[in-house]
Amino acid sequence: MSRAREDVSMTPVSGPSYQGPLPEDLQALAGFEDEAGLYSIRLYDRVGSTNETAAGLARDGSPHGTVVIADTQEAGRGRRGRSWHSPPGVNVYMSIILRPAEMEFHPSLVTLAASLAAAEAVNSFLHAGAGPGAWPKWPNDVYCNGRKLGGILTEAVTSGEEVRFLVTGIGLNVNMKAADIPADFRERTTSLRIETGRTVGRDRVVRATLRAFAGLYSLLFTDPASLTARWCRASRTIGAYVKAVTPGGTVCGTAEGLDERGFLRLRRDGGGELRLGSAEIVHLRDHDG
Image (cartoon, rainbow, N blue to C red; front, side, top):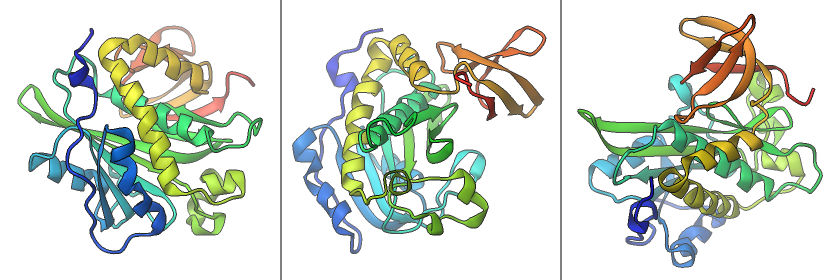
């Protein structure tokens, strides 16, 4: 499923736009387009959610590769409409407009590409040998040392059978301290600062994530099987004994891999395989014990 270069690369357009005062680490992204030539960055001090802002821009004609980045979100969203804690000045909240020339792949693969890109970016800032590092958890999370560090939300806007555009949102906890995390989530949430003990410029995390995503997104057009294989190698979900909570009920089994759509292949207790397009996955036992 090869595609011409112009179908898979990000088209550069006009430079960054600013809405209100911005911290220095986000202002530093003003030079990103000149450096990479792939994305068009739009910076905001605050938005309702970056996905909603990006979708509005896409409806108004903003091109493939437009990236919305905000210092804070007033109504950040995760999967199934859950709220995403979005304090100002500390984390990455961004969404990418994607306009693939043809949709020869399932949108779930975009989420896999984004979660793997985010995990690889985070790992570039972790100390060498600091545990298992960051990894993508199926279907849309980024974990580090057993706690959630980020999440992905991909939304498709369609017209009949045709996908008009996709918006992929990436949220990463960068400089939050433990005390900044709501008490109900503190035991299962982490950040780069918590993991490394130091502050990391958000511009550096954005740059690393966008660079990684560009290459992984290209694989959807040239070699999607290599993307799913690479994701499986990176994820601790694959090979783990898990509980899958679905609308039809709860099932336990071993996560054996992904199919060509990015659906999870679950070997159920007692035999038989399920293929899950969406579920809440709880790790009961990791593959490495």
